[in-house]
Structures are given as structure tokens and as C-alpha cells.
Image (cartoon, rainbow, N blue to C red; front, top):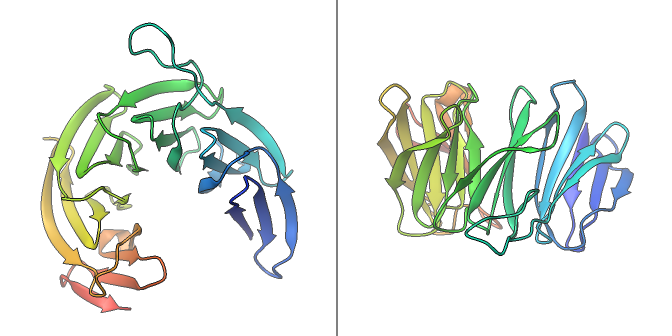
Length: 254
């Protein structure tokens, strides 16, 4: 019942979905808020996690309308390839909260993916990539994270902290990745092209099963699975929202 919006100037606005009234304007970021994720912590509190061009990640308590924790920005160390102790050193591009509420994942322009512990707000692990990371998604069993960067889709095992799949999937930068609720399907998009894969978690294989192109020719910005992975929704800014029937390999409706 609460809509959470990020602003160009860094404010986070909470809106009542029933009557459109403004519940609160929360201050914490000082630059454009690029991503907002909502969910619950392990203890049941409703939260939002926001990421910004100020390189900060902030966790908000939606019921009390307060800031729980500000994470970052990070600072590069002078030795080796070390990063700070606390956060991102580049713009934050995407955030996903685990279904259990035990952790969340963020990624950004510092070419890293951070797994944050929701109890301590400390870093459980940091994965490194060769390029800026644009998007992430968490598997429903919470054993894997999938990411999208410069044409590449990668899968990381959260238990072994190893990269288990590297898929050179697109000619352009990957804008969004999604994981189906049954755990079998993953989707990615870059430009107007959408790819769907079957994920074999035993062999750690990613096999392409579908390829679609936005019929308008516009860039696709967001993906999400519906119907337990039997359908995929794609969204484009200022353009179309399409549901793709993966059982029939066709667009169902615009």
C-alpha cells in the first residue's frame, strides 16, 4: 500500500497507493536515486533499499518512515586492488532483496556486486567483474545471483562464492535480468533483444531457449517473469509493455 519513489535530487518519497497522498519525504541521498527495491527484513519489517549516483545504499523502515542504515560510499585503498570496507565506489545501478529478508544484493559502476547481510548491514561477500554491472537478480532458492554487464550474463554461487556461468549473450550492454519463481528460467535484455535461458543448477549450464525482439524497435529496460515462469513481461520507457507466452514462443498482448 506504499509506493516508494526516488527523485533527481536524492529525496525518497513515500506515497499512499489508495489515495495518492504523500506520507513522507525522506532525506539521505544527495544525488539522483537510480534504483528502489522494496521487501521485508527477516524480522518482518517492511523496508525499501535505495541506490544513488552518490554511491550510497540506504535501507529505510517504511512503517516508521525512518532510515535504518546508510551504507557507503566506499573508498579505494592505496594498496593493491583493495576497496573500502563499507560500500560501492561507483554509481549504484541495481538492488534486489532476497525473499527470506536475510540479505540483499547491490551492483554498480565500480564493477562489483555486493551481498549485504540484513541483520548486521555488513558485507558478506563482494564479487568482481571486468565491467560496470548494470543489473542483478537472486534465484528463488537464494543460492545464486545472476548479473548483466557489457553484453555478458554471469551467475555466481553464493555458497561457494564462485562464478559458475559466463554467457556472452548480447551485442549491447545488458539492461535487466530476471529469474523465474520456479528457478528454471533466466531472462536478459540488451537493446531491443530479449533472451530466455534454461538454467541447469546441477551442471551449472545456461541454455538459450527463446529470443525475442521488441516489435517497436525501442530499447527494453525491464523484465519480470509471471505465471511461475511460463510468461515473461518486458517494459520499455515511453513505449510498450509486452507479455511473452513462453509456452507458445509469442507475444500474448501489448
